Length: 290
Length: 204
Image (cartoon, rainbow over all chains, first blue to last red; front, side, top):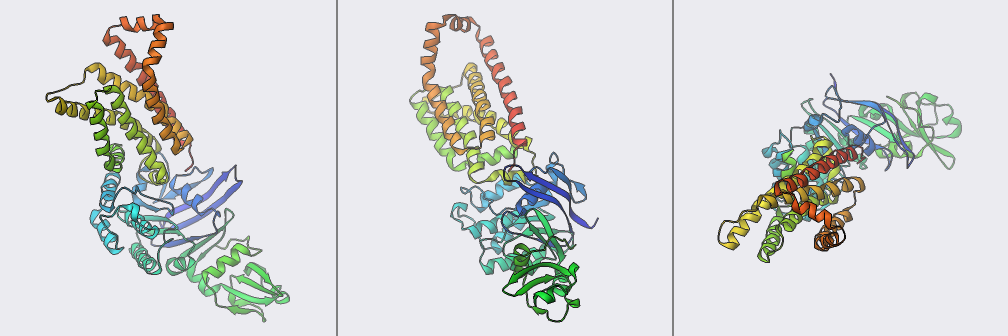
């Protein structure tokens, strides 16, 4: 068993908004961090909700720790740490009181670990959560998710609202979390630099459909954003073109193989943010490269 | 399951003193014991819903190792726990205020439980279905207004349908309260089942 999470043919239809999550397939290997990238409303939270059972899926199978997920058997959630971007704990509680609540909920609750993260994230123990900033609340949610022996973390915009220093600290914690190859993280974030920093695999989703699944190393070594004229563009192997945007008379093209480009293509430095923009705003990005 | 009820209690810890003060004032002014016991039990249950909704906790709760059936059941069992606990505190406070042991008559215990269950059976499925925080205040208002109007309603029934009052009046206490409890329990169980169905079908 090499995958901690497998999503197979996941489909979810929202009749009112006509949004459809279209046959989502992906897997998360043990020891990996998988970044889930997409615009607001692309289907990231819906996918995560379907995995966790907060939303009903219309079709498809979800396998976690080698077992098919069954909403009537919630014990599996003991081993899943969750952070939602809009998750809030009762604001009347302080950090210590929250630990008392969580101790009653999770059998494997580890108070020492919780206190370790509270200290690491510099959270005040006696202050009511009501007085916490968004960043502090996110840190608290992350501390809780890390303190009940979870093997899989599902993080929806978990780094939102954090300052760069705090984000960096938390990303280090995430890297440390998967080090033993017995854990994994599935995270979505609008801050693609965070994903770029820690993720091993990237999944891009647009309009409820996965448009690109790629290993980060492969992306950095083989993929490229190139500028070229229209005539040169037509010389690029069609299978290598993932997306393109026309700007004036030039095209910005995302290619999956930068080694076989025709003359006249100028490779430019790129970030995952640039790739995301091209994939989301560009044309001809229907193909999924796994 | 009981961990969820404990969670609802911990979250309202800051209000427990307020509940105690309310109870003491009502006892001091010798208001109806059933009214205040059911009122406080209802406030505690409705507040647990308020906190779940206000802090968007439903999504979080559904990511915890509990089924939706357990989450709903915790609310229903919570009503019985909160009502029983309020009755115990009622007797303790009454004993202190009266300078001697005060025990609630079994009829009042049964009536309080039956009324708390009946009332809970009304509002819980509606809260799950409509998920509107305003409902919580509306239900408390309805309860207080109904409690105030009950003597007038009974007078009205007595005037226009005296046989109904006479029928219940002539029933022995054991039969009357057993009947009351039976009706409430049946209604409660039906509502419990309906609430589970509503919540299991809900998208969060």
